[in-house]
Image (cartoon, rainbow, N blue to C red; front, top):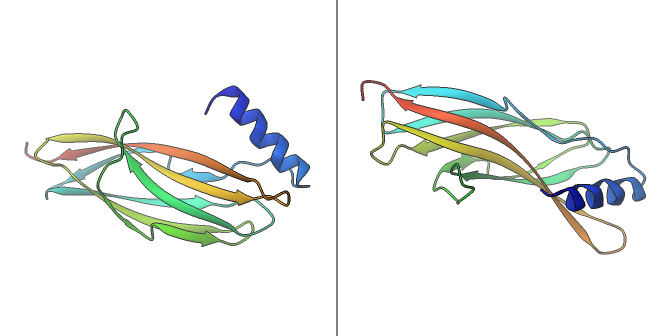
Length: 131
């Protein structure tokens, strides 16, 4: 997100009457070791806002290219100031290790009929044991 987009997001949220807070993904980074052809990451997505927000969880490679992965749940609605857990399974695709970014993307519909998409990502390394 460039500086202008970040400033626009903060202004939009403040104009909507909410204190600027950040959605969260925890943990933000980690290493997952696996004996199988997939590795898993369990995340907690947090909504600090005073209203429910829709989120979509997406997986990208190191260059932010989309990655095929199983995400459960992939689309979720999180209530005000609440959190939800998400499980992500990523295939190694024949590699001994794989670096991915798992992102929670929030969509805010504003009163003036515009929408703002936010994104926060964690970085994860999957390592195939014995390779």
